[in-house]
Length: 101
Image 1 (cartoon, rainbow, N blue to C red):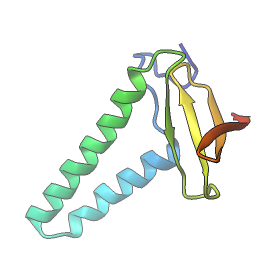
Image 2 (cartoon, rainbow, N blue to C red):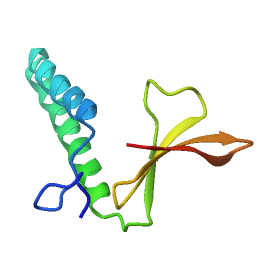
Image 3 (tube, rainbow, N blue to C red):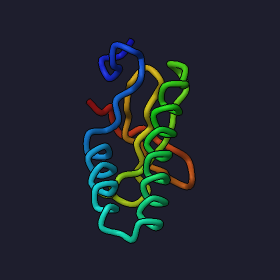
């Protein structure tokens, strides 16, 4: 089990991502009741989906995602065993730039 996992085997979200989702859920309380409930339901489902996807990955399987602070054509590849690598696309082909901590 990777150190990114909780004792129950559920991956921990990226801390920045988790904080952002929780902030948006909190801010949605200022919206009209029906709209706020819809936003909270969507954000809750988004949070659970990401955790479920990460929990179901085999060690050699991965997901690819971007981040606001990455240059264009750069992405993060996260493997089921918790490894993360920075990749960039050259002529639509992924190239590993470096391992991430």
